[in-house]
Image 1 (cartoon, rainbow, N blue to C red):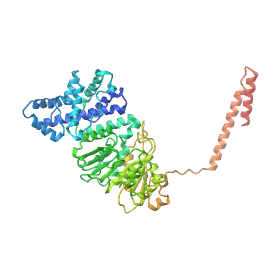
Image 2 (cartoon, one colour):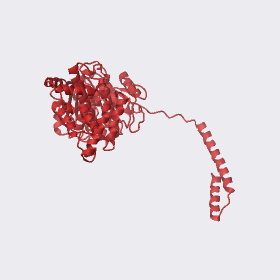
Image 3 (tube, helix red, strand yellow):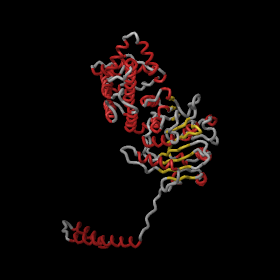
Image 4 (spheres, rainbow, N blue to C red):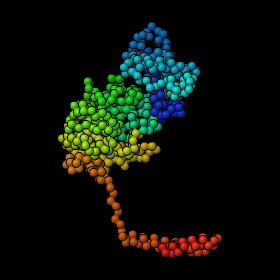
Length: 531
């Protein structure tokens, strides 16, 4: 049984099959798609076996045999109806992973059969619509010609046979999937910013946003720039009622949107708790016709992105209450922030990662910032270490927002030095994350790391939230002992004179091949004697 580290090793072996053929941003789609297909197929067979035998199967071969027999019986139609009701999809016996694996082992693997399985799942329910669109089984990236392409897919199918889904408990598979996404993000580098938030910032965001709401049943979590969904799913780790969390997320990139959908299923999120959409968050507000305010809002939007900033947005409810100002066309940071804040419940908490420019830039951004501060909306500002994210090396900050606060103070935390140097990115350890949370919860000034600023402090700084204005991290220069410095200079001068004298003596003992060299050396000796 592949669990824990074994499971990760098996999954990573699947990546090895593809690694030499295409870059990480492409082969992640194949591996994560095939892992998800295996999950759907294996959990389907386990459900079939349970419906027929009222127990879990020992292995997939046994479940496959029982399913094949059942499909030959008179009760086949009724059985398929039951399965469809609980799983939302059906697979013919020759479309299951175990069936396709056996074909791969017997050198009779058929890509058309695997594609038919993908199509069947996608057509079964809107939940799965277009889910495998990016897994191109006929791509030249897999090799030249039908035989090599088929052989590549067959090899991955065989490697992934080591992932024992029916005996894997809890979030083990979901966490392994999350690990894979993180590894791909590391390999992909700058392209990864669109689908993954590194562990340290993600945990800080989620722990802060869920703080005080851990026991709420039916917690509603929203991420309008969800990427692979990892930020929202991190909230499960800190909730006392994780199975009842409802997830609302939107993502612009179709392939990343599909990844988030897969990620939800692999973490055991029920279909009725998944509310995910493929769309442009700023251009068209969503959601508008169901729940529109949320307990927890987490965001890691693209930094300083372009957006239209069209005049019509001044009448948009999300942006209309900020002095007639919109985020600049070339910097959509405040547009994302105001969108998330608009969808926050009166009792909720929002945490968003943005570049430091949002803290001090002028013009329209200053007006928006001033209004948020005067309304008490900005609760905390946390400066993160530089080089934490895959898509930028610049330092970033977390802004924490709340609605309808009586006080208008802001807690500043300088966490810029809380990191360990990694190979590509800096990393925050659990100890660093805990330290930030400790400072956040205490909400008081701590020398060199935190400062609780009143609205008067902030006004005195002209609504500039640049962290060094509030948290003084400078170290005092030690006092210089002039007597000791003078003695040190004397010692150094004495040592130089002695060294020059010794060198002059050694040079004076040399013999020379020609008069020119002798003149040059004697001139050098006279310089040494002058020093």
